[in-house]
Image (cartoon, rainbow, N blue to C red):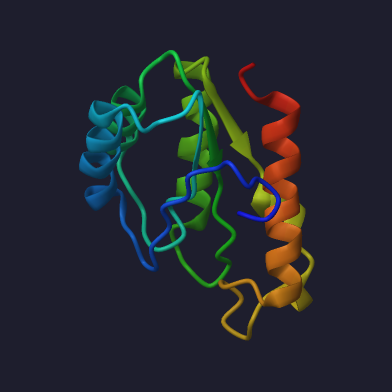
Length: 141
């Protein structure tokens, strides 16, 4: 993704959970490090509560556009509840756009390793391109 958006600040960590992320985002906001457009991909490694989602959105603030990538984890029981919560969030937060990775990637098992969770090199290309396309199409100018 860094190649497609070379000026992007990316902080990704394997298995990061929502509980660890709100404080991290608050620290970036306090430092002035958050851009006008923020991409989040949380929910793949575990569910979160509506209160946690609301805390994340409040940490980011109403003046930034948030792009939240939904979960494509068919082997995990929380996939649908996470995706429903994100979709419901678009009604509460006008600055939230859900990137439907689940809908786009569903039916493409060849994009994933055998665990059907982690994209393989082919899937990584589609993942990065799909997110970039959505950000470019809907980014706050």
